[in-house]
Image (cartoon, rainbow, N blue to C red; front, side):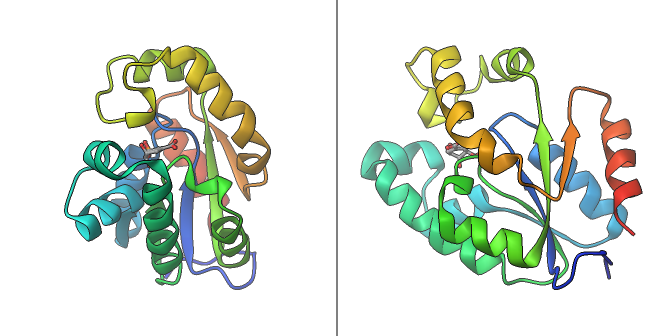
Length: 173
Ligand code: S3P
């Protein structure tokens, strides 16, 4: 069982922009602590029965955000999990409030240049398809950073994976 100084913590939530390494780091942490790893995008895909691209294309972003709210609020009530939160979930105030109340949140902060490099080839991010990726990333980041930066722990994720994991471990009892 994970232990934290903050009261009422049920899970560790990884937050940050798409491409910030939430799933990669989250899977490693879940192996280290031998607890479950949940990726909210995968839960959304299972619930709808389609991948994220198809959900955006066929039903639109508003529908995706509705399902995202439902799924995130559900998984945030689980116990003792590492949860990778979809990058845009933080703009939803209900999700934000529950994260604040019952999770230990970790913001994986990545420089814009690295994000752009990582996301340039991604075909899995509908918000970036057929758009100027740099502009979209800048706009999304500007809207979201105020929320990301309220995390319980901020980790600059530009280093080696093992260094990131060590920094996180040093902050978790
Ligand atoms: C989104 C991020 C994606 C996914 C969807 C929208 C966003 O998740 O939920 O494509 O708005 O930033 P990841 O952050 O896991 O890539």
